[in-house]
Each structure stands twice: as C-alpha cells, then as structure tokens.
Image (tube, rainbow over all chains, first blue to last red):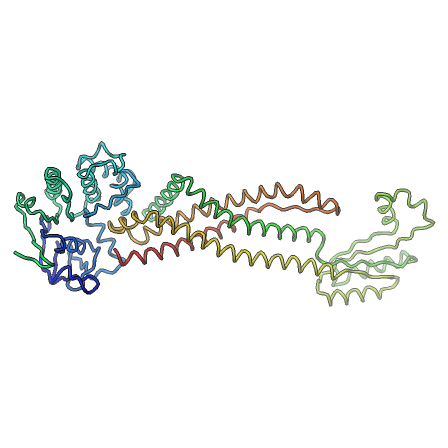
Length: 217
Length: 303
C-alpha cells in the first residue's frame, strides 16, 4: 500500500528532515510514527500525501509512483488520502457542516450525496448536534474531531493523522485515538504521528520511531 | 459531459451565492466595475448619436442645380432626362419655382409675400444626390451639370460635409482609443478585485489544494466570480446610461430646438448591449485569469 525506498528530504539544501528511509505499510494496517519535535514525522506524512516531494528515493502509494507524479496529477493522489493536519487548517469563516463538506466540493459530489456523507461523518465523530456551529465555538477536542470528519468524509483508503492528540488532555487524546482506531477497523489504512508513546502502547500496533530523520529501534 | 456541466453549474451557483452573501463588499466592487464600463458606453452612444444625426442631415453632399429664370418646360424636360440617365446620380428631386414660392410664403413672417412681388423671382431647382462622395468626382459632376443648357448655377458645399464626416471619424477614433484604455482599466480593476478576493480566501485555497483541489477547481471559482461581477456591472452600466440619457435628452432637445434640429442621446440597441456585455465578461475573465495564475504560481512552491 505505502512503500518508501531510500527516501530523503532536504529543505533548502541545509536541513535534512529525512535520511534514506525505507519501509512499507500494508493495506489495512494501523501504524504509529513516533519521535520528538523535528524528528521528521510531519515530513514523512506530507511525503505520502504528495504535499512535499522527496529529494531522493521513491514513494509508492497503491502501486502509484507518487514521488515521480507530474504536478498536474498530485491533486488526484490527495483526493484519495484523508489527512488530519497538525495545525488543523479549519476554515473559521464557515460552520462545521461547510468545513466537512469541503473535500466533497473539491471532488465534485452532488449536493444530495454530499449532504448525506457529511451527516454520516459528523455522526461518526459525535458532532451531529453542532452542524451549524462556528468552529470558533468548539473545544479543542471537538475541533480535532471536526478535522477527522473532514478527513474521512470522502471515504479515503488511507488516513494520515499528524499529531491528532497534541494539546489535548489524556481523556480527549484517548477518545481521538479510539476514533481513529474505529476507522481502521472499517478497513482504512491509518498512519498516526505522535510524540507521546504512552498513547500508542495500548494499541499493540507497529511503531516507526524517528530520530533526526532516521529510524531508530 | 454531464459531470462537466454539473461542476460548472456548481461553481457558478457558489460564486453567485458568495456575491450575494457579501453585499457591501460586492457592491463596492460592482460600483467600480460599473463606472469603468459606463464611461466608454456613454462616449460610444454620444458618437453614435452624432453619426445618426449627421446621416439625417445627409452627410453625402447634395448638389443644387438652379435653372435660369427664363428656362422653358422643354428645357426642364431635357434636364430631367439628362439627370435621370446620368450614371453618377443616385436620385434627384425637382422643386418648381411656384412650389418654392408657396413654401417660402408658409414660413414665419413671409405671409402675403406673393402679393408684394411683381413676379416669381425664384428659379426652378433640381436637388441632386450623387452616388459618389469624393471631392474630385463631385467637382467633375458639378462641372458637367453646369454645362447643361439653361442651367444657371450649380452649387454644393463639399467642405461642410467633409468636416462633419471627419468629425464623426474623429469621434469614432476617440471612442476606439478610450475603449482600449477603459478595456485595460477593466482588466486591471478585475485583476485587483479578484486578487483581493484571493487574499481574503487564501486559507480556503491553501486547504483546498492540500485536500486535492486542482488548479482548474480554484480557477473555476474565481472565473465565475468575475463572470457574475462583469454581467451585473454591465447591467448597472446600461441602467446608468439610460438614466443619464433621461436626464440629458430634454436639455439637449431644448438646445437643438433653437436651431430647428433634432438631438438626443440614443439608447443601446440589444445587439450592442450583447457585444458590450460580452466584451466586459471577456476582459474580466482575463483579469481573473492573470490574478489567479499569479497566486497559484506562488502557492506551488508551498504545496
């Protein structure tokens, strides 16, 4: 499903975010990426989502060479991946419903089908009662659930979550993890980055540990 | 194909809803665009009104053939025949001396004129409309007609007609020049308006790109925004022109009445409004294309 072959990523030729990473993740797997800030976790996820390009190496997602994809094809790759961003990237000029609707507008779903999917996604993350609410009125945990709803509304095969439990108390963090686990149980390949390994330990999943851009055991 | 039309319909609807949801901001943009459109429209209507008036006054010079006072009916019949078969004459009208005197008597202050005159001093006149308009040809025709028997004098004022013609041409050139200038202004105004909207929706564009929006998706949204704005602005400009004409025409006509003439700023014909609106839309889309293209290029390096 996801394959990295000797992937490196340099920023402006000086900062080496990732160094010769090679790994693979099978379809339907749930994998954690652990490491301190600056270890390269976000970069790894962005490379999978084709938001960043590797400096060297190959990235293959669902048999497609993401690293070699032309510019005008990148949006197709991103449409098949759901991403929960570290900084949320919530649009505060619209309500919860409209935020979750955005990926469906981008893909071009009909209004009727889109409405149905948004309602289902919000129901899944327990935000059905807050459809018309502004995101500014949501708590941290609720905003994170909004981001998850937006990431899964178009039913992607791969879900990437970049520090989904950051800035949340342990209770909320565990709720978020459970939510992500439920998506995994429905067959989605889930990749979660976090710096708190205690959250990962209870799930018995593979953990890829990064330090200064390289895997450590 | 259905999906293609559906996506466009969706973008068009979203853009219109966005304009309606931001009434104050939209109003300012529309007012700016409408002003940029109304000025060349008024200028165009002014020149076309002058041209219409000039054609009523006959921009094609007419030649007046005055017959000798003692010209007989046979002489007149001969002139009729000569003028009828002349290849450079489109048509002519004959004003007999008695008819001319009667018409003169009907004018203000001329009542009872015939009772004061021993005989009719007016000649028979042929008013000739030639097929040609060039000065040399007209001069040659004038000479030809003046050599016909019993023709006393042949007159035409080519210089006046040329002046009017050149004035209309000058007006058209000015309209053309101003249209280019205002067309450029429209592109730049739309560019700025769309760019401001892009800045206002910067977050949305970034997030949309991150979750899989193509450049085409982003462009489509702003293209329809520019489309609606230019259509609405064209309607406002048209209404503005109508309003201006309604104010100016009574004043213009009162002025023209002093010279026993007709003058008015005409309205826009439907096909002119169609071309005008289409031009406004195309120029606006060009401005939007430039603005969106520039922003997307900047964004590429970050996404």
